Image (tube, rainbow, N blue to C red):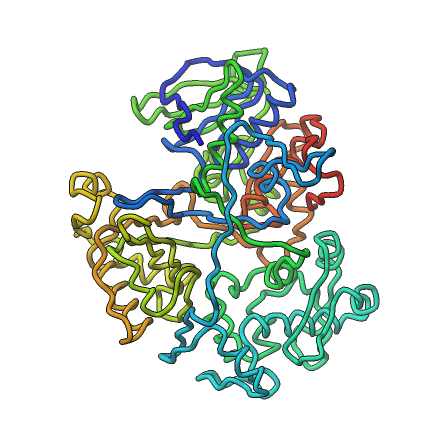
Length: 585
């Protein structure tokens, strides 16, 4: 796997091309790869521009000194039901031999299971009470209801957070007579009061989401479209504010329970129940998918990824008659501006990056294009940050934990036990996976001036470690996190100090967020289509994870790029993508 993709941080004043792609994240890279491999354009006519000096956008895999495996600071896994990402990583099924997969990309990536650990060992620490994650299941097997420190409604007692989410979604779906009649065979309640099964496909959900009505006569939201309700509003109405607190805390992510679009939340929360679906990742680091796509584009003569070049604005008012748009870039290294001329522009960017562009130009100007302005703000920017920590041994094994993640209502929220180097025993922990309101807790500590001081460890010299000085979390943050780790895991384990950290806050510009969520009240299908070509008389397109129906997933970015390419660039569906795979709205 080659991650030394050549990037050009220089300039070529008055460069003339057909398509300028802004953003070297997964949707931008995929767009360039498809345009040149489909032979729509030669690669010298399709160029990628990015502010960063690296590829992959919000994917970033790193190896910590003294370890021989990758840790993830951004996106870290995929579902095998996600056909584009799965096929690009694993290859497509041979028509002649169903057991054989034929590679699509030249670079070899090694798909491996994403370890979820054993729920009988992993921890839940809520309101200063410690459980094993299977405590609810174990109590249910004995016909008991697990007591917690949450004052839940009588009808909700004994449910785990996953089960209670399912109960809410089942009750709302079945309260709509149209859904109950049409989809009764796919929405099932088990013999056990805690068991619900949803066998709805993505197409089913896309039919349900715009039509679903909230039918609860005693509720203030009765007869409202579920699409127009915030998820917090709906959860509180169904299971009380205390039930909401339980779901927000025990669910692991505050971002799941913020007041986002309830109709979009439903399929997201019940998960993907396609038979045999599992989580996987890439042994060479999950950002390998970005590099592999980039390398397949770069194989073509004239291909170029212009790094460290910031798009400032674009205009139609210029003197070059052969090209529709003039783009102005600032080269970061030389602090000089230069122009590129193109006939189409693909803004493969999330919301914050779009907002950082010149908002007074003809495209973004709110007086000329208020609909675009409103639709750009149709998604919530969800803050997320990660702290990787290197330890000299896997102290969590004392608790019988080998992998997976534990969950708490402490500000650290989650920790993932990433892995152990077989030779050195140095081990990596994702020490905090914070989101939403916990972000302000950590922001106050991450702004401190004194950084964590790295310490030498087995096969990790100080010289090597000092290269990571500028990505260390602050000392104050690490001290606070160690405090929380010790409270979280209890007195049964002695937790040593880390020897290195790696901190990433995705709220920093230009990303503005780790991932995105649709606001209530927007017609999501209409906005998604609109964003792919906001103005009918302009060849300007927006694509990426932010305005997809699989927010937070690479697949969402790929699907939006693919639909844009088919609808507006005349590309045919790729031969390696199954005909029956649904790309969404």
